[in-house]
Image (cartoon, rainbow, N blue to C red; front, side, top):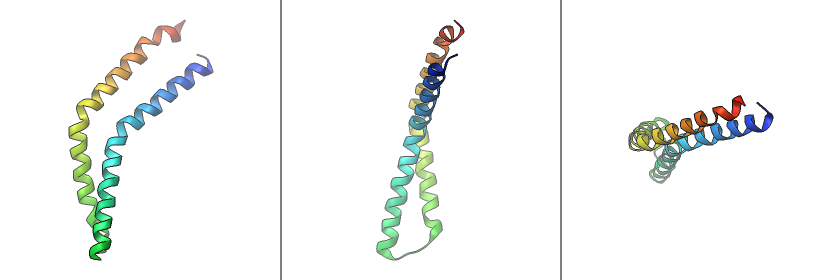
Length: 89
């Protein structure tokens, strides 16, 4: 396996990890930002107030996006297995 093949595989793996994690992370960031704005407007400075809504939203997004995420993962795995013959030769 030469360096180009290794870098291509590594690049695909990094992109796949970002695609799988992005919906959950972006939704948690948006909810955290909204709660922070509400806290600053109402002057409630409770640090633990942001954790529960973030967890609920992350779980909700995970449940909603699970079929898409599994489809993307399976397709990526199929692509990697189809490239095995190129790695061997």
